[in-house]
Image (tube, rainbow, N blue to C red):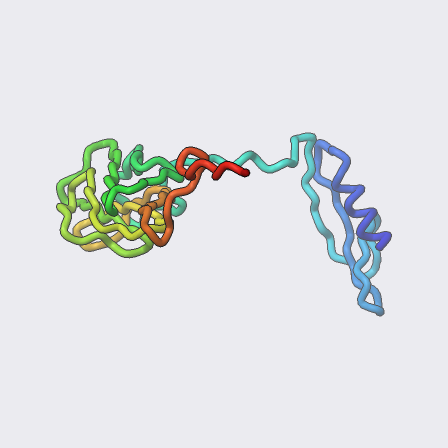
Length: 187
């Protein structure tokens, strides 16, 4: 335990050069660290600096999480801009429009595939940037678009966009202060 505290203390202080630390395991299996060499110890270089060790805040982008498989040109901007994240479609009969932005323009040998909940949407032109979807069932859905090359290799993917479809019914009537009947008068 002392060794762990010592090591944490060593790493906590900013130093402007690398430190040499010696590491060894004793006969009982306990790992030790020291700044002086010991028989059987291995040398460990610890680079330290006065830089802030906190990780950078996450950045959100419509760029792909992984690099494109193909080495061809990538698109600077490829995103789903409609629906916006967490948008609700209420009483639309399951009609949802998905709009994409692609910059620069889609190359002639590339195509766009839109997936809803992991299933590709069929019956659309492969170079369209607007998808008018019909009969989307009520519930939570995730839209993702992909740019594919002529061989079917995925080149780029948008960030996923979650949206909700709500259809009011007799089984699930709308509720809210303006939709409830007024309370009955008490006698």
